Image (cartoon, rainbow, N blue to C red):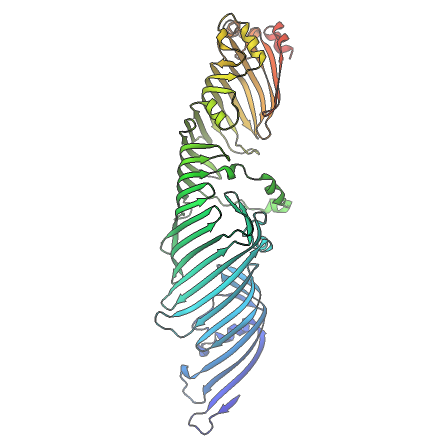
Length: 565
C-alpha cells in the first residue's frame, strides 16, 4: 500500500493487488457492494471456473467519510481455459482465454473460446455510468462453424454442410432498457445441400436479421433476408407481449419456388403452427426425390441402448394452406391450379383436401373416421394423368376413384390401406396378343379390341396395402366381349410383380353360369370369371413386366381349372 499527499489535508491511499485464483472467487470479489461494480450490474453467467490472474490498484482518500466517486479502480485480469455457463441463449462457454479490464467507469473484455463447441471470438464493453440514451453494453462476436463444430454442437447435419460459415452478432444495449441484436451469416466458404436449396463452396450466400429488445424481451423482429444463388428471401416478424407470433415472408425465391408465405407460431401449448403459402411456382420435387444414398451413408446406426432410452420426439401440430399456379412434383412434371389444406396431428397427416385443375382435374380428401382415416381420390382422366406424369402412355381415358380406409402402424413408407380402385371406361393401347385373340373368339363386339387398342368398360380392384406390399383380391375388368380376373401382390418399394388371373372370352355368355345361386362357384371359381377361361401370370417388375398366358386352361372348365392350379 502506498500513501501519498502526506502534507495535504487528506492523504491518498493506493492499494496494489496481485491475485491468482479461480474465476468464481474473482467474480465474488468484484460483486462486493462496497466496490459498486458487479453488485450494481450483475453478470448473468453461471458456474464460473478456471484460473485467473488479476493485477489492480484501488485509490481512495484516507478519511472517515468517502464518497463513491472518490474511489478509483484500475484492474486487469488475464484468464486461460476458463468456463462460463449461460453465456448466450443458455449455451456454455468453454476453453476461453483472454483479457478483462475494469475501472469504476467501465469494463472491457476480449477473448476467444468455444461457445457450445463452436470457435468464437468476442469483444465486450460495459459502461457503469449511465447517460440518457447512452450505450450500457455492446458486444461483437464472431463464430466460425465447420463440420466438426456442427457435429459437436448438434445444431446441424454434417452430411448437409461442408466447409466453413461465419456468424457475426452485434449487440448494443442502452440505459433506457432497449437493445438491438444484428445477426449476419456468411456462407460464401461453405457448401450446403438441403432438400429445397443447395450451393457449392465459393458461391456467395448471406442471411441476416434484426432483433429489437426491451427490458430483456423481444420487441421487434425485422430485416430478415437471405441472398444466394437461386435464393432471395425478405421477411419480418410480428411480435406481441414479448413473443414472436408470426413470420411473414413477403417475397421468397428458393430454387423454382417463388411467392409469399405467413407462418403463425403457436400462441399456447398444444396449438398448431399455421402456414399459409401463396405461390406462382412451388417445387416439391427435391422433397419427393431426395438423394436417399447420401442420407443412408451419412446416418449412423443407433446403439441398442439408445433405442431403448430414446424419447419420442414431441408432437408438432401443423395446419398448412397453400395455393399455387404450378406445383412441381418432379424435375419436369407439375400440377396446375393447386389448392390444398393439410392438418398434421398425432405424428401423421390427419386431415387433407387437395385439388388440381391441370393436366387433369384431381380431387382428394382425407378425413378422420373411427380409429383411422377415410381417403377418396378422384381423377377425371386417368390416361392423361399417367401419360403426363411419365408413368405410362398405354392408357387412354378412364375416370378413376380410389376409396378406402387408411390405418396406422406398419413398417413401410406408406400407411396401411384397405379399399377399392375403380376405373371406367378406358382404352388399353397396344394390348397383349392374348387379349385380342381371346376377344376375337366372341361373335359380338369385335370392335372392342384390335392389335392397337383394347376397350375396357370397367375395372374394379379391391386392394390392401401392408408394409409397402399391395395385395389385390378378386379384382376384375372387362367389356361385353372379354372379361378378366386379377389377384396377387405388388411390391410398391421396388415394383416387384406377382400377379395371376384369368381371361374370359365371350364374357356376356361365358360368365352367366358363374352367377347361378349356390352352384355358381362350380362353373366360375373366380369372382367375375367364366365357365371357360385362360389363365395368365404377370411377374418381373413394373418397369419390365413378364406376361405368361396359358390358353390350354380353357380345356378345364369351372372348378377343374381351380384344382389344376
